[in-house]
Length: 264
Image (cartoon, rainbow, N blue to C red; front, top):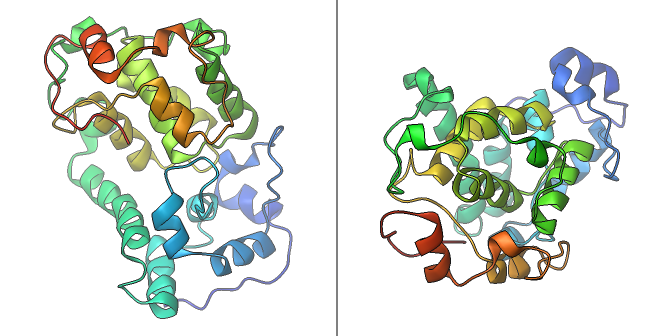
C-alpha cells in the first residue's frame, strides 16, 4: 500500500493541479478541504455507524469522495486501511459500497458507450423517445413545484456536494416525475459535483432510470421525510408532485407494474 502523506498542509494548489472541478468554491457548506481534513476523515471512519445510518442525510458517511476524485486516496487504499483497522466482518457494508465505485469504473471501461447511451431499455412502460432530451429550466433554477427538490438543487449548485441518497432522490425526480432522459440530468449533476466521478455518476443515473437495473428507483414523501432527517421541507402541501403512497405514485409515474421493493 502506498504510504499516505497526510501532513497538515493546505490542499488548494494540489487540488488545482489534480482536478480543475475541485476549484469549486462552496457557498453553503462548512467543509474545509485540506490534507488535515482528509486525514481526520480517514481516521474517523466508523464502519458500524456507516452500515446503520448511511441512508440518512445526517448519517455517518465518510465524505472521502472528494479526496478520491482529487487523487489524494485511491479506493484500494481506503479498502486496505479499513480492512487493517476494522477487519472484514465489521466493515462489510462500507467495503461493499467502496467496491461499487471500482465496479462502475470497470463496467464503464468495458462499456464506454454507457457514459452517454442506455445500457438497456427502460423498465417503466415508456420508450427512450418518451423522455425529454433537455433539463427543464425550472429544475436548473430550483423553481420546481416541489420544495424538497428545490432545496436539493440549491445545495448541489452552491456546495458541489449531495449525500448519495439525495442524489438518488434528485435523479428519480428528474427521470420519473419530469420524464427527462437520464443523460440530461447526469450531465448537469456531474458539472456541479466537486467529487464527481463519471462512471459512478452516469451509471447511478442509469440504475435509477432502470436502463441499468431491473426496475426504476422512485420514492414517496414518507421515505423522503424519514431519510432527510429534518433537513428538507417534506410536507405534502409544498411538494404536490411527490405526494401519494407508493401504489399511487407507481400508477401515476409508470405504464407497467414495478417489482417491489421500491425505495431505500
